[in-house]
Amino acid sequence: MNSLIADESSPYTWMNSARSAPPIPYPSIKIKLAEHFDILITRSSIMNKALHLPRPFTKPVWLQQLQWVADPVGYMETAARACPDIFQANVVGFGGGLVFVNQPQAIQEILTRDTTIGSRVGLYTAPGDLNRILAPILGDASVIMLDGDRHRRRRQLVMPPFHGDRMRAYGDLIGELATTAFDAVPLNQPFEARVVTQDISLNIILKAVFGLSDSGAGGDRFQNLKYLMTQVADLFHSPLSTMVLFYPGLQKDWGAWSPWGKFVRDRQKLDDLIYLEIAERRAESRTDRIDILSLMLSSRDDQGEPMSDVELRDELMALLFAGHETTATAMAWALYWTHRNPEVRTKLLQELATLGANPDPMEIFRLPYLTAVCNETLRIHPVAMLTFPRQVETPVEVLGYKLEPGEIVVGCIYLVHHRSDLYPNSHEFNPQRFIDRTFTPYEFMPFGGGARRCIGEALAMYELKLVLAQVLSRYEFSLANSAPELPRRRGVTLAPANGVRLVRSR
Ligand code: HEM
Image 1: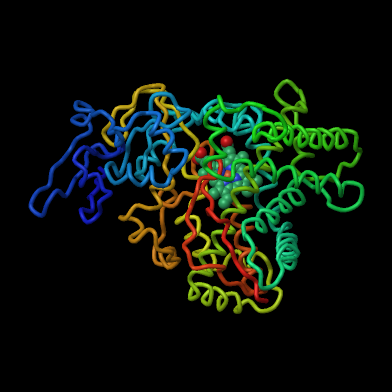
Image 2: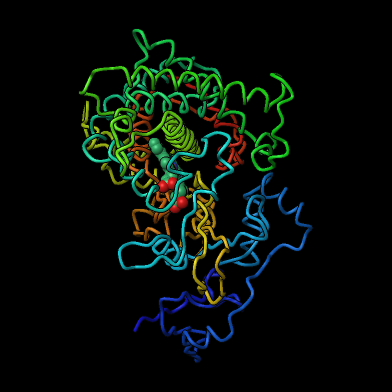
């Protein structure tokens, strides 16, 4: 029989919050209440007194929703102070209330049952329709918008270029692209690191994963694609500009100079380029291509039908968008923290020096301290604050609260990564945490989990490590000013508010 002893030193454990109760897999749970008391709670007794989910906010709903868009970090931290493990809140786009789950075992319960696998029936689903906030950018036919069998098959189709041996082949290219981008940064002038890292991550995904070339006949198209992708992504650069995503009523085309009007026009130009690329590839007779567009072009569904142009466009957009924005942000944060903490940078350089000249990219990838620095970067500033939403399908209990079919839950990655029982002084950048301790996949979860676990995790970690290693060994930077860089909403992600301003001195 399983038992779980709560750690009363932590403000996050359910023992310390009167209304919390243990996760469901434990038929009986021992709680160390005080030195001399042990109480045994059985699952049936919990079932009998299932509680209403705590709601930390009492402000008018419209104000709560606005705060969620304008200041998501403040919103989550305020809520977690009152309700550390689980709470329900009014967040735009999810009807009456979204259930935020911030406790690793409970998240594990959800993400390991978010789909039916064989005879194991899912208690939850991961409906694509719940991600419709992204539809203006991604359309509605990509893996992010699909669910059930179609979702599973599409994941299987698009996964291979992001894993295994294929990754090794990208290693040298990643190093070259990082050098080209940082060589172009002028000396002794402040620059925004995120702009440079976005250029690198976009180049990587366009060249390595999509098989596009920036030279020869396709050169102009490559540059235009890059330019338009950046324009479309940058519309959501701040909380204010992101409002249009959250409030569809604001999605009005008032002409080319209005934000939405410009977005619609840029998106159309981007679509034209993507459709042109698809048409040319369809007409091509080459059979040696192994990139993702070629894979999708040759795929057939159960009825033997190929993917339509719209499906291809949406999938390319989803992978391009999810694949470069997130990684660019992570790289910029890594540069920030390694320059904010010179001792971390020095230790990293010492580790890199042990590899000698021209190390193999896989050797770099496996370095323990580099891994710890990258993990700590994604821990302190998880780019994705939340997992994609999951929907309850069968009445279920989470931490003692009864959830009914139709309720929407998310794993709150940000709050898990700032639990003081797991990460003391969670706002301190301390890679040593990852050397001293191994965290479970639900305690450290920058890429989510379950049916929608990030497809690009391996590529993202590879890029992050190789670019950081290359840049630190080759160049010298300092922070352009001493003000702390804070996380700010960028679309549905969190990014450095000022893009990490650095000065290159070598
Ligand atoms: C640091 C970089 C990245 C972070 C932090 C990140 C994070 C995430 C998270 C949290 C999820 C949701 C998981 C869930 O709901 O459980 C996700 C899904 C996804 N990610 Fe990433 N990601 C990153 C890079 C990438 C890259 C490089 C690609 C592709 C090239 C990618 C493609 C996707 C896709 C397609 C999904 C949706 C999967 C599905 O719906 O089945 N991501 N990512």
